[in-house]
Image (tube, rainbow, N blue to C red; front, side, top):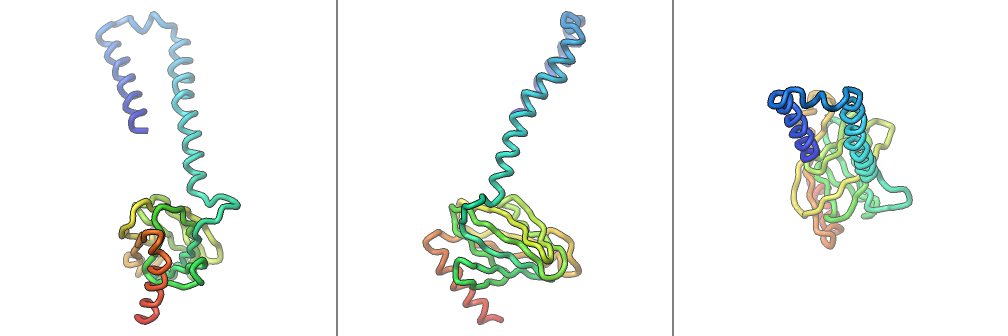
Length: 189
Ligand code: CUA
């Protein structure tokens, strides 16, 4: 998009300079033609591929029907996050989300009280956590590492402190890491 807008900007600047440097140059092309080419043809060439790409990219954020990658439930409540791993025996971690690297993960987001929002800035996408309703967000982390997640919807006095840590594990370590984190969390409770 940046490259495309830079080219368009340059094109408009060239037209603008032509008006100064060669007065009368533009009048060789009929006004109607300027409108059709500049107002219809050019925007169509630019916008149609962008709309197609945006639809495609948007679809990639949604869980695919019939396709069942790792599912993790994110449960918000004032003012912390619980993560449940149905594919790992239903264990829970608190304040720490483990995901395997290099594979899509569907996060099912809900709330137990007010509206919150689930957001990991580095992974893009952000979705509301709504009481009594499950929203879905697909994320994929390419590299193992540690990231920050946070609540992105004002939800009361503790909102500012409602963040969580995201730990991306190597796929072969994921299961053990989840169980370890769940066990440690239980001990700390
Ligand atoms: Cu939860 Cu803001």
